[in-house]
Length: 263
Length: 317
Image (cartoon, rainbow over all chains, first blue to last red):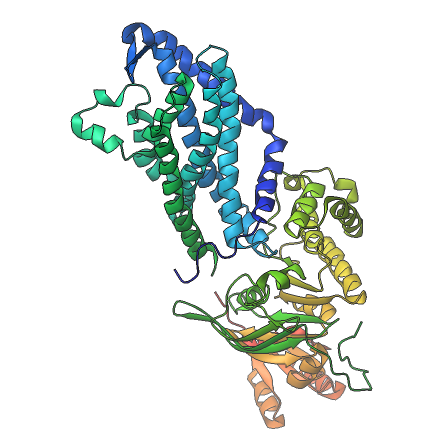
């Protein structure tokens, strides 16, 4: 890395964020539908349909109902998906098909600001979706307040981590179809095996250890604890974990995008 | 406002160039896209970079507007080293890239207002500038239309309006009229002529010779990364072609030998001879009377003749 990663970033990254927000406002109604309906569908299918078979679940010494177990996981999955998909498919469309980044790079904006603005935007979208889901799930009485509100800042930092990972892939995939690979090998296994729909301790011993390395595992554990009103020092470690993931993947993403776009 | 040293300048002006490129070089891996290119663009002039596809035109101007770093050479824009003053330099340049990279989901007006934010232009001022630019580009009646619904010509005019949102001192256009219908091309040309008349410095690339002849005060022709010639369009025509062209279809061998005895320059494409004449009617009379089986004509020499003579007639890609 020739240049220091953080050179070239000023508060102007906000301009990139604003651009995306302006576009988002054009069809916000459609963007609102997914986080509103998704928890309803899942709670209906898994919560109502499956919970009779499942019964009660043990979590950190408490016995909780199955809907109460999966509802926070739905929020965590949504944080991951919103940020990751925004900074992969959507960013790729802006970069490759719409040439939005090219246009921006002919203005005083730097590449670093463009990428920062994109990632912060992805995290913002995750926060918006989280707020909507939180509201819907609260209607079922499945969130304990005020602790549950901590899920909002968690969505932001988690969004930055997953968005940075996504942007890193955007920097390296030659064609948009190739996002299938990280989605299939990274996102889908996390969706299934991160303590989302069943406790990690149900996994074979080796897989339990593997799951600890998956970012979603930590996100699920934290949203679940916050939603149940369980706060402890371990949660600080969780925040720290996402800060570290961001500190690794954010510079990597900038580095890859620099190689890709500055020719 | 100082103007470029034009034909009738009787006194000597020392004018600081807006763009000063010296021995500019750009390499992509093993490919040398721009090789030892030097030129200057003076305030108030329209300077053209001409060349076939792949000549290095876009690579050259991308270095000037700070989009891509140069491999070697020296480049000053507004008297400043662009690589050291990237942000300040870009704030004073308007760029119209080859693609219509508009925000398709936003309206015409929003496209300009969003772009103005990239330059930190306050909202109220951005709105006023956007409205007046849309009027200038005859787009004000479409300001609430989504950019994706515009015709090709309108999109181009919007990209041009967008390039002017920061009141640039230098406007850089990469093939401004490629792919446009004749009406739209003329509309773009008229806008550019208006801007030039207002004293704006313009740097453009094109492979349309009529565009270059009409708009450019000075130009350079490049091919394979090198500059072939540089000068005023009229001087280049005079120097490389002369006044007139005589074209002869299906020439006979006797015509070829006749031309050789006269020691005249001509180009032979097999089915056609292109004879560079000094514009004397007598040669044309002679040819028409004695050697003209398949049709012949005399016409004024154009920049296109210079271009084809220097870059060759074979396909470039």
